[in-house]
Image (cartoon, rainbow, N blue to C red; front, top):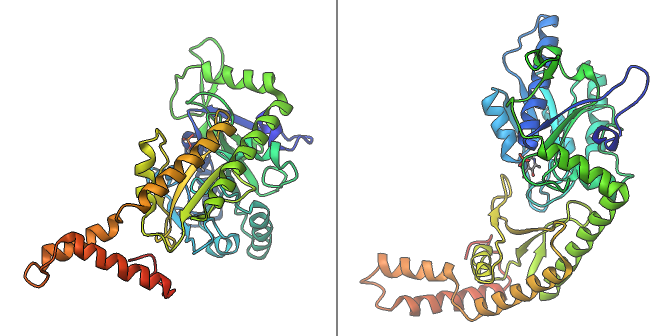
Length: 394
Ligand SMILES: Cc1ncc(COP(=O)(O)O)c(C=O)c1O
């Protein structure tokens, strides 16, 4: 059912294969292993060295890709991010591909801002490069979240097995698959994309049981729950739920924009989430907003972006099925209260600076930390008023 959802080809001699996993991390380890083994087999056949495999991803990948690279000894070549562009640039990714690249991994729904990477452009560029070089570098799509969003909200978007170089896809059932935690899926376009030698056959359970997972025993409850959700909700049910999530994300996004205090870092066409940063002229930072929101019962994480966008800090709210419009409106109201409260408080950044000045120059500065802080705040405001660029450091 999931292979069908991802448009796996059903021609003569074509049959997708797949496996249920604990989540996308395990699915990615297995898919990565399959690429590594296929590449090694090919290099052996060509009589070429096969000890330095690499994988190309964006710097925005989830930690499971770093785990895969380290655990399975594959060099991770990351395309750096840049200001205002927080996903893998397909042009730069293809430039980084060489003969030892086992695959390029694209993300459908970046963990950090929900944005879909341009898998179609990646595929087209890679088809061209493969033609020129004679290599056959494939693509894996990490659709941990987007795999259960794109088919329902953006059915025309080509990101899946419709693209010839996409050989495998992972998705988490416990994200937008609407199942409780502990289920993910890895799907291969064709049996040939999963080397036979990775599949073990055991017979001690009464019949031939092929197995390709990291763990052997596992509860079947999540598999049944996923099956139940798919047949109970159907295509129409999933579409309604995803549309509802998207609408609630828009309510939150518009509410945040109306405060005039935030830049929105997420895109409208992606995972239903809102990632946002305080505007440059703010005296406070995103970590303070996150801390204060806890008092209202909200856990909204604040984090810095990966290289080369580390200077950007964002807050992120993921909208799931149970995050209603009323909750979205309440969150906006609570954020407004937090901003109001923060405005009446000295900034922690200036407070820290002031404490530093007082601590390290006690004889020079015969003032209290509060006095120094006031001066820093006044200077800061003047600087902002003068529209001087501060590179995020006040
Ligand atoms: C893009 C992406 N890939 C992989 C993962 C790992 O998924 P799981 O938690 O199902 O192992 C996540 C989880 O946040 C993710 O966002």
